[in-house]
Image (cartoon, rainbow, N blue to C red; front, side, top):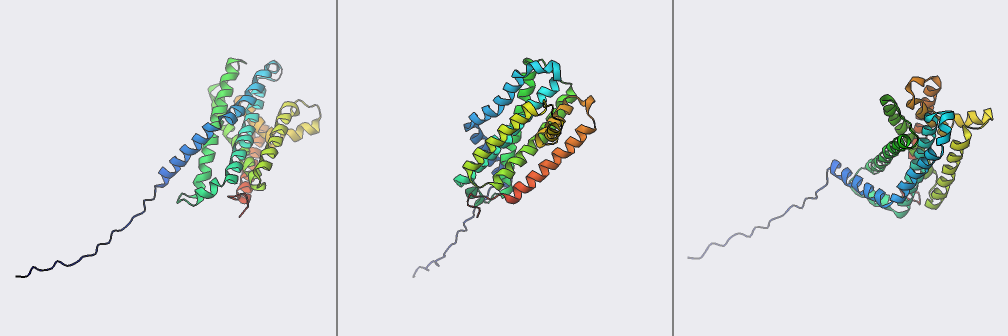
Length: 264
């Protein structure tokens, strides 16, 4: 009896592409950005070193102008360093290397790329603020009330948002990384000069300009936050101006930003 032939069955195997979840993708990107920040720890040290040097060297001015004045100047210069020397230069460099273009071809939303970068910089702002508090207390013997510490943290993040937006605007306006590098250094030096001599100037008109500049508004709200009882209408208007500057800079920075140096 002839054996019955078995039918030939062609099986198809479905290949599935595993797409990582948004949360997992964001955490991976954030870890990569943190590692990159650690490798560039020289810039981290410089961002912390300059304001701390100013804080220590201006110790003699504390009896004259008060601890909040010296604190706020140092912290404002540090925030400018993070937004300009840290964030803007790193974004311009990575864009020039094509890192953003490679990240954009992944399934990850483009917004995650910038949110991850900004999260790292917010961590830097927190680190800077804590370092200023510690050195100010240990060296200059400056202490704040619990409410003063909390409000200073809040205003530091608002001031940091202004400078991060400013850095984003510079990167959006200037496509060449070398030009961004040199340009942000010049702007940063200008901010230091404003901080060290603007408030001490006897020229009323120049002092008013400095007071309502991005540097002056951040410095004003930081100084007022350190002494909550001294918060007045001037500090409130400075707070509104700081928020306005941050929104304008961020809007222009996002509008002008291109994901590669060629602007395509």
